[in-house]
Image 1 (tube, rainbow, N blue to C red):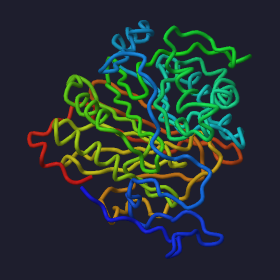
Image 2: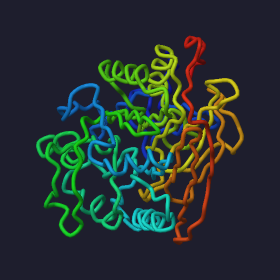
Image 3: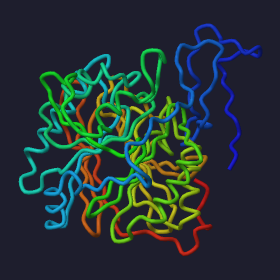
Length: 397
């Protein structure tokens, strides 16, 4: 599964940076233009190397059953036969909180509009806080913006949540752990006038068990393109193999496998993670959701004939700088054949998903720079378990 290296044109033959250069842009028309390895530059102030993971709070296989702390919610889902939830990523309003606040306001408004089928929770796909996930930044970028959002917010970390500028002042993911992985959940004083009770997630990579879907949350660490160790790869494969077959399987990973943006693009490393898990188990996820790229994209890949797998990038949750797209909707990628079905790179927003026994459906709410709110993408895919008779037939992702 080796990929050809991508040459960094910003470097001279001697390895020094060209004056005035910026990072190399992905190739137009390709969905996995990034080789998956963080480039090493002669001069840099950022520590984007692989970071050691914090100690898990729970024991393998790191399951968190929704009924554990939200028994009434789990019972309601079982009774109604339907689950509604929000999905968002890359929310931290570090430079300009206006866009994060606009999205949060619409998430709260969405709760009020859905009489009889209120969302049950929010699933955050990483980069909760910029730029280094420091605990001191959680008030302005997490607690305060969602002070009126009275649903639980589950999350996997993103690269900025794990990045560390000064190792003498913080450890990787210390802010994430202080809220999402409390042994005895309480209200952190740092939340000030926006108190929110913490969660006891078992690890930074973990599986959410709900009555209608299993969510496998992968932590792809800090390097550009993502990186996981062999222990987490074994865990991912085990979760695919043991996931309940009477409900949908959703994979969440911060670094996207496919992306048609002009800044990051997709990750061959994360493609390998998913491809290996499918080949070893025969289980195909019903949907893959990611962030990292600051826009919204819905991409389809034909892993199974006549049943395309959706790969959704939802990195427009509030970070101010959006990323443009280099490929038209409906055009397949030159490198991997994945097809861009919908995109917006001029609006911020979130997804409202609904799952029942048969279907995963969703719609996006978009907020443009002027604060105008519109409905954007809508989609529907099967929620039935997808199991390959011949796992080795999986195409190279």
